[in-house]
Length: 401
Ligand SMILES: *Cc1c(COP(=O)(O)O)cnc(C)c1O
Image 1 (cartoon, rainbow, N blue to C red):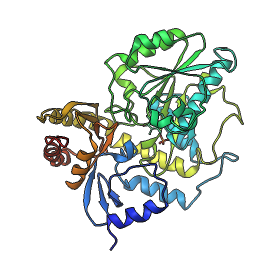
Image 2: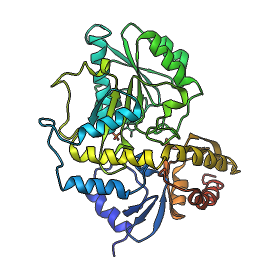
Image 3: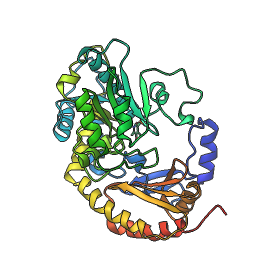
Image 4: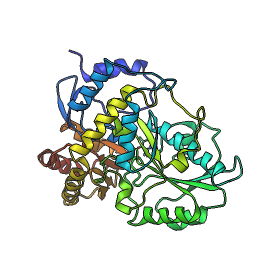
């Protein structure tokens, strides 16, 4: 039998080194659990960056995928298919919008939102061509395309990849005044994460999003919420903006939209915005394909019928309270919403993630000093009760002396 080490050495030989994974090679997943090639079992506390809210290999989504895979997988949008309409209607009804544009990866959906917002800016708000401005936040994460990394404030994300697209203004996150001051006559949109996930699970002050929403309304600026990570139950509501009653003009979703089976993303908005997109303006070979649509239908049904948002709310609040009870010289802050939880340490988080792995818990550091805990939303209290003493043991001990 080959070991984790063997697989890692073999893969490293052929793989671009654009990641620094924990040294574990997974071969099977079921629900909240995954197994490595040596047969060791782990609790998955990352959930594919929240793409696996429904758990690994959810049987209902797997069945929908298998059924559709035997029937019809791709038509391209040159023809219609019988699954896409059902999928898009489901998103519209769930999220409360009139129109949806389906894509594949999250970054593609963000790009789509940027294109739709700009075109709306030129044709509806009547901003001068090629001068539209979108306001974004420091410490954002919206994906990895050249346009998107161009407005990242993280040096590593953009160093070496320029030149970048103009038209973005970066302001501090969680700063209403900065937002208000940054608006000009050319501002057409404000692209924001309700909680910055990759940025280290940064939760803005209560009322922040609501105030931004009001400023957007007042200035005819589109509120564009990137809920790719915070959406679909993760934070204890179907969408994190619900905490603030700040319904975005354009909602961006992805990740758990497929339950981890396939890249599926989308933007949702109302007709008066989506109408600016005409045939030929935008597209994707795989966007809205029948396989993705069938998977998306099942993935959304699971979130709703298994009541995952409410479950994440109840369990997340309890879990965070328990984490806050851990007495440790290296814990700076426990924060989050629902089952999107970050523990900021006073030292590097990576060695602690490695120790957790040794104890059968997979979590990943984000932004160096933060350990993120974001298990599949189907997790039960007893599973977290199993994990908590292990987490406490690891996070009590200083690594750097
Ligand atoms: C993951 C993520 C993205 C990018 O999604 P990809 O599918 O990796 O392109 C964009 N925005 C947020 C908030 C994310 O968490």
